[in-house]
Length: 132
Image 1 (cartoon, one colour):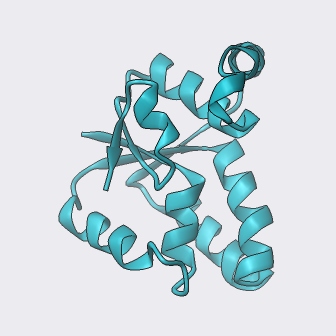
Image 2: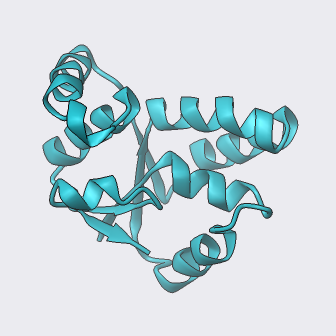
């Protein structure tokens, strides 16, 4: 199973003080054979927010670990993805989604990924399976 990992899940894994840390760690233990997918925009968001929450050193180590892990696929942000995400930002304006959320939607749909590891329930309204 392919599982898209959102920044909320990454931050929960990174920060032990995060209220979702236990659930995030528990999910990864239950699905060790899943192919994990994320995007460069997600990692950029994790670096920005994680550095403030957890510190730059620990956050950079976390992201470097993802980049070196064979079980992770990190998708690039191609111009056509950015264009479609901008359209999505307008289309889903009433959903309160961020631009990075819209890039994730485009990437997941184009990659036929139906399941997202996140604590952001907005993705459920758009037809994705949200775990945990």
